[in-house]
Amino acid sequence: MSYTVAIVGRPNVGKSTFFNRLLEQRKAIVDDISGVTRDRQYGITEWNGKTFNVIDTGGFVPDSDDIFEKEIRKQVRIAIDEANAIVFIVDVAIGITELDEAMADLLRRTTKPVYLVVNKVDNSERHLEAAEFYSLGFDTIYNISSISGSGTGELLDAITDNIKQEDVAEVLSETALPKFAIIGQPNVGKSSLLNSLIGKERTIVSNIAGTTRDTIHTHYNLFNKEFILIDTAGLRKKNKEKDDLEFYSVIRAINAMDEADVCLLLIDATKGITSQDVSIFSLAARKGKGIVVLVNKWDLMEKQTNTSRNYEAELKRKLAPFTDIPVIFISAIEKIRIFKVIEVGLEVYANRQRKITTSQLNDIMLKAVEAYHAPVVRGNTVKIKYVTQLPTVVPSFAFFTNYPDDIKQPYKNYLENQLRTHFNFSGVPVRIFFRKK
Image 1 (cartoon, rainbow, N blue to C red):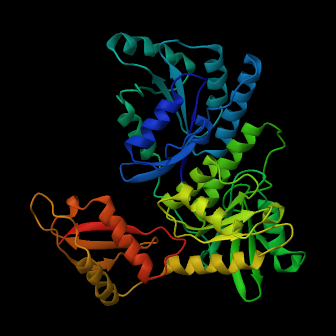
Image 2: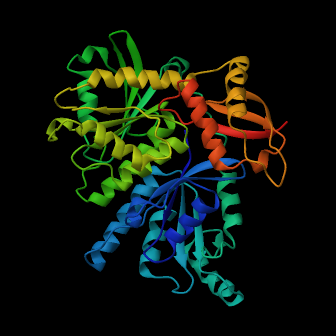
Image 3: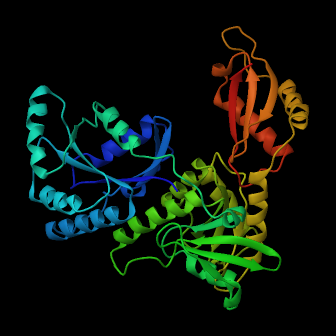
């Protein structure tokens, strides 16, 4: 299972700046999608060769101060429940506030690692002032400036020291089956899809104890098709507050995503694809998962001649550059095209497992290289002599060349398109590396 770090703290202490620094410094995927900060709550970062999920708990609009405090505490509790470690950010310029003390009180009771981070420490005077935060009762404090990045390295060292190379010793028989995660925003119909797939024949369902707390694992074995369905829906605490739900569903979806081979991303046909959907999609792609996009509630749409074709084109425009993905128009409630979802999901699973022999790969890809050479760099001709598939979970290919660092993105895209044209990798991210021959 993956490791998740939640960032907590009262408003305006610099949580989002710190979050963005972690992600952008480490080239994480959360794209700059226009929209409120709340749509950019999560991403992946890497440090010392260890990768972990980062979740920012900020980002709701308060009606009044009391509600604000209540909401923040609620999110801190969720973070304590759901994350593996917590980064608690305070602000040296303001000093300790009541809200900081209340949060510290909650966090001292958890057994999970808590990193107390004093932000905005950007001169020697503030280093001295930061010492007052020891009174919150944590052994170590980390002084950082999230704007300049000073001090973040020490903090990340401490976080990654705690991450064990996760023991993924799951039950073998269960691991051998394809795992599909149903992901998407709240209320897009994830539970309905699960119920339609399983139907009323409860005899065929055995709920395997969820490895991730509160996700439901269902063993599907019907019509000669067998796989594990991981459902992230119907798992919400009975809070009506939208932000709580969103925050819960984000953490759950990320955990389910980490475990899955293929993600079935549900979007609501009537709303179209939102920036949050694009974020979820990018995250699944960055994690190297197979992806099938399901446009649910299609029965509610007014249709003309090319409705679905135009809808799909618009969808892929927003998901670019990774557009080689199956899109299925379904209605979970009316059971329209439900079984196609299973067939396509299993095809994408097979594509992700696809291994291509080195001879076949060189045969086809070297011809593609001949047909269109990599651009000349500083007067040097870039030559690609050999290609091989790497032994990784996500289809990855190494191209051996004399100038590996000089090959630019457009040529990389060309090679990826050629791979996709000749071999079926529909629905699967493909990774390309250039190595010195």
